[in-house]
Length: 513
Image 1 (spheres, helix red, strand yellow):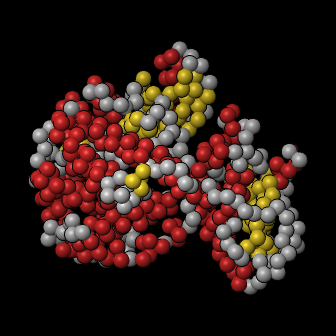
Image 2 (image 1 turned 90 degrees about the vertical axis):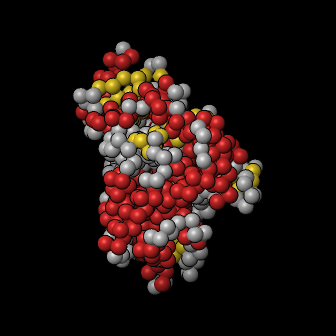
């Protein structure tokens, strides 16, 4: 066990009087915090580690205020400030984004979904219900819970003030515009940033600003929304958080849905706070704009700078939202240089079609049916790609075609579900293992890079009328990671009319003939 895991085990034992039975690290996200699921005889909790002490203090204090206001947030069960860890009640694994994605997929498969708003865009009724419940709670968080918050604990700023806004805008400038090589006049853009801040600072800012109120920070528990990751909260305007949720990139809500949810939010807000709708809406789209720009900065930092390519897949959704704002003339405010930059971004095809975005989404691929063959094909006009999973405890599979070459990918650097008791008797074709692996960004990045390499060879082999290519995935036992990667690779290639896929799981054939 690592030092963090040992410390969490000790805190768990001091809290409940028993040693944990099992502990598993949860998939990472866009933060540097790490989370663990800890199993005990009498239940399951979440262990959290964060080196930033002030952020921990803010989270724990905000949680206390939220719970006093009745807001559904996890309970802080125990904390150890010295080792920068704490224990939380477990809210499960289903985020609002996952819930939305799954229900949309069910709708596309012919299951019932309802139309909302103008009826232009479908959204499953149970998803709409959770969104409305979350939005109803948002007004409580902003107004009632906000009155209980000690804003001196906010970190890194006590308010979403001019300094905070400029941080976000410069984050966008340096980590998106510069890394994406979008040209701009720096002084003129800085002047427009200042003008945008002037507009936003005219809004009433005496409320709690959640800061990252989006679908991945809302858990769905028995159909009810619960809220996490509000440690960056501070005092600010009402408009920011609702803009964050409704223009959440990959959630890709339609405009009719957004308008219905915005009206619902204002209705709920009026029940507890006298809001001037016209004044609210006068600056609302300015907050939509700064939120989208902040998100693009995050995508650039994580994607371009830290080379986590899956973050770049969110860029087209943000550009789509900016395009909508410009087409409807919802932003502008005389900020000519900023608008020119946005128009340049929206028109830049490379931002939609860069390699990291073009690679097929791994989670989509694994859900496809796999029309592959388990025997070699003799069609002279097709390339046969033989895909193996294997164990490095044995030898690398031989090329039966005699062609030689191909690829061998080592999966042993990926997270290993085989170390966890609940997965030991499963393999990479079983859904719990699939769910475990696909939730790790590094697994998706690994496969995206594999797809790029193999696709390049497939294209060349087909053009030169080659007959065979071999691709092998190895891991320690040939049971979990290699099987999952081989299955996903096969599904990726199966859509090509010029390729036959021959898939074999060597270790499974040996141990389960």
